[in-house]
Length: 189
Image 1 (tube, helix red, strand yellow):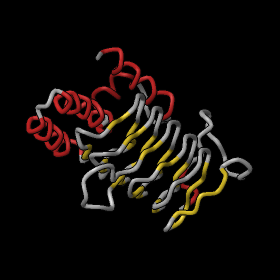
Image 2 (cartoon, rainbow, N blue to C red; image 1 turned 30 degrees about the vertical axis):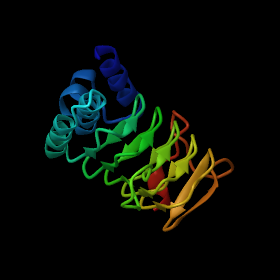
Image 3 (cartoon, rainbow, N blue to C red; image 1 turned 90 degrees about the vertical axis):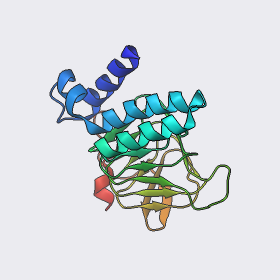
């Protein structure tokens, strides 16, 4: 548990230029608190303590403004930047090293049972206010632009912009990359 917490804090320090220190991240980053609360709720969910898991997840939602269903599958080093308004549904799968900005919805489009939420690969950036909806897959290395509405599968290394979002290859765009090879999704508003 402590090793995973240190790993999360190190990921924030690498990706967030506003992060001034590990203690500050540990104490004040609501997105990290939401992920850590999710991990506890997910542990309860996998132990079949469903009611208690839901109580924990709703308490974390109350504290952070981030709602992550305890049955969702979240990878390592997932960062929810600015936290508020993020919703991740029950059957969503999020890979490793994913950066999610505020106001993002990983939601379902069906009231039927089964897989109804999106799957995000690894090394993805999801811009502020984006909605990724339904049982779709967004390939690793992709960037979802701010405000995009993604309703169809996208291959790896895609740039997804618009409503509904249109996938185009990320390579060859003139978009500036940061030190981690990420494209800032806000430039595609």
